[in-house]
Image 1 (spheres, rainbow, N blue to C red):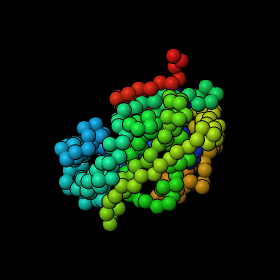
Image 2: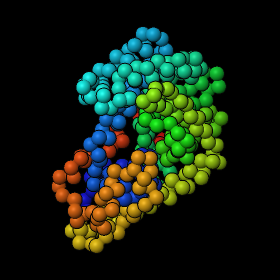
Image 3: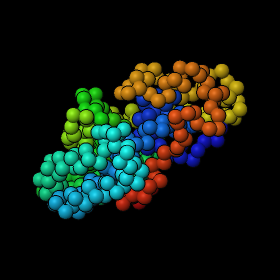
Image 4: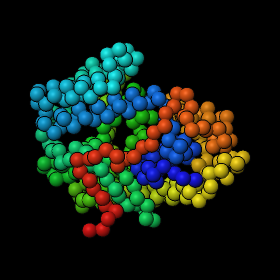
Length: 316
């Protein structure tokens, strides 16, 4: 089977999808299916990232805050006009401005202690057994007093409960960023990662910070587990590459990328639940055009140019 070139570029988000459910990974990253309606959430998050980059790059002052709002509005309106605000409420420009005000108040004092080093970094970092993880870190900063380094990771969400908060400390993504910090700096210079969640609820908006700090000893567990998951993923991909697609289509079931039924109703449910319920071998049912309500899009973590590129897989 011939795979899309981006399928073999594995970042923490793709690997997390595989950990959630290998079949979900297959639909999303091998076949490239995604729900049409998920485009707004991703685009809104991207414009939020851009606004915070403007704020941190230009300093915490009134002019910088207004510039961040202007950039957000300009970028957002290129895709979504005023008529859509009611549909996507509370993720709208007006609520984003309110949340930016809250972020400004929360971070103004901290901005004096933590200086920006790079606002966006593309990373390539080795793990065990020759496997390579790619990624994109939002914001690398340094404490002006201690010299410690930390990553700020920006998230936007329409929920804020224990399940949402607790996912970050052990997540593949946050572990990848922490692993990168320990690969770049001495242990004493590593602070860790802080997830900064912009919470958009119908009853109001706010910003919550979640510190995610792990010792080198704790990271050994992450490294071992992540490398094992990566090996399983690579084994499934290798099987597809080595097998003719017609042969795969004639099989009663898809023999790789097994289903994990415990993830079917995670958060708001899996977008591929109906397909898994109906099809033993989805290759027998998927046509050239994606099903109604879906589009075909392949995620390449290296597609967008970053301000800084760190490739730790290449020896000095």
